[in-house]
Amino acid sequence: MSDVTILKFGGTSVADAAAFTRVVTIVRRHGGPRPVVVVSALAGMTDALFAAAAAAADGDAARARRIVDEQLARHDAVGRALLHGNAALPFQDQLAHARDALTGLFDGLAGQAKERAALEDEIVSYGERLSACLLAAALATAGVPARAVDARRCIITDETHGRAAPLPADTDRRTEAELVPLLDAGLVPVLGGYIAATPGGRTTTLGRGGSDYTAALVGAALAAREIQIWTDVSGVLTADPRVVPGARPIPRLSYAEAAELAYFGAKVLHPKTIEPATARHIPVRICNSLAPDDPGTVVAAEPAVWPGAVKAIAHKTGITVLQIASTRMLGAYGFLRALFEVFDRHRTVVDVVTTSEVSVSLTLEDARALPTIVSELRALGEVSVEPHRAIVCVVGEGLRTTPGIAARIFSTVEDINVSLISQGASRVNLTFVVAEDRVHEAVRRLHAACFEQARAATGSDAIGRTAS
Ligand code: ADP
Ligand code: ASP
Ligand code: MG
Image 1: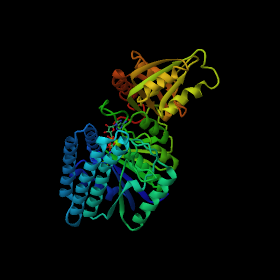
Image 2: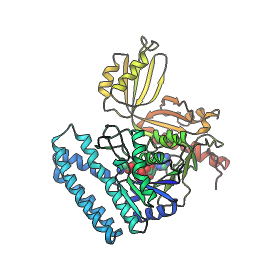
Image 3: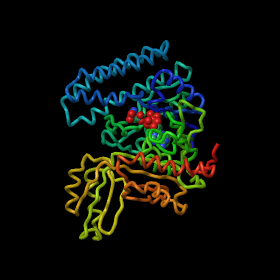
Image 4: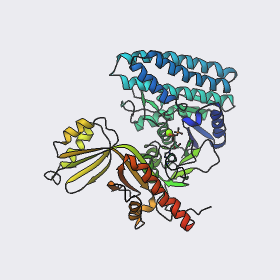
């Protein structure tokens, strides 16, 4: 393990000049001897660039340019507030260059539907490229020697534009080669998250919210002592705070717990963030850039089994459930293989699977290939499709050992139609599906039963903390 610390700042942590100033202070105070910074695009920038790309593809280049000009003016305002002397001019040049390059890319987009995903990746990459340049210059101006690094020279992926998969050996090698010399020279490398490149140098992206994943990949490549994810909440909370306003930070999570939460909808972590950290046993700390002294959440190897069982509830909407019934085929050798080959062919991820004697039920988030998938599955059995579903995932290492917990969970939602119940092999999660329009109600009730009522009755809650 090295003495490198990765600090990743999300979009809201770099929304304006005041936020950049907070980031500079955090890097100084929390970065240890060898900090490496990973930064997202300014809040709203990636959405704006996607909207501009869509306008350009529709032939409205004027609207695309307007959107970009508005965003570049925001960057310019931050630059003018923070950068002085030598640092100010180069950043203005970078903004002018970005404007020209984006205008050219919009022209390309109008003509080439086939290349759209690749061009979109190139367009949205300007969000992270500019924020990395701006943050490196802001750090340098504040007396922290820093250097912007093009993340596309470090994170190497396959060619799946929009949700590319990293190539681990290339990424490790290139990240080390790019960053270690800078660290040895006493500089803080600042790289954009989310963006990457194929071995041939074409720009790719890791999927929305992918900067967390970049931080974990860089952390793994450098055997960092810690990966810090700085965001706008004080850690991973017991539920999505937009649905449960009383959700509270969780002090510790095991890797398995955090992975399940991220996978099943806790937006605070990109679903793949935990994997590189687990492989190299690197602790991941989730902290609040607006309240840097809050303890946050530490994700690490020890399974912290608290008295009580449930640590958090995640949920994910926009789910489609497919049911394939076949009295003839189901028990037959090769049936499941044939079934999953259909999803494999269409590169569609299946999240939850359950089987009975006569049917298989499964959930999909990505329904783009649904019509073709359904027609191919019909060769295997009767297929029914239930759109507008949501997954609820209750997580806690204690679920492994606590008797009666499933009964308590399901009695809480007894008047809500629950389907497709599954307990993962890791046994740290209990997952089920409800109709999308009832999911908030289900999550709120579960949260009340697992955290609020238990706390009121006993003075300590289901995750074992004493009421204060
Ligand atoms: P960033 O821009 O820093 O990457 P995100 O918006 O991607 O931030 O993630 C942080 C947000 O995730 C929070 O503001 C919160 O609304 C949402 N969120 C959803 N579920 C959870 C959870 N269980 N714990 C914490 N935050 C959550
Ligand atoms: N800027 C990218 C997005 O908005 C990546 C990230 O913020 O993690 O999805
Ligand atoms: Mg995020």
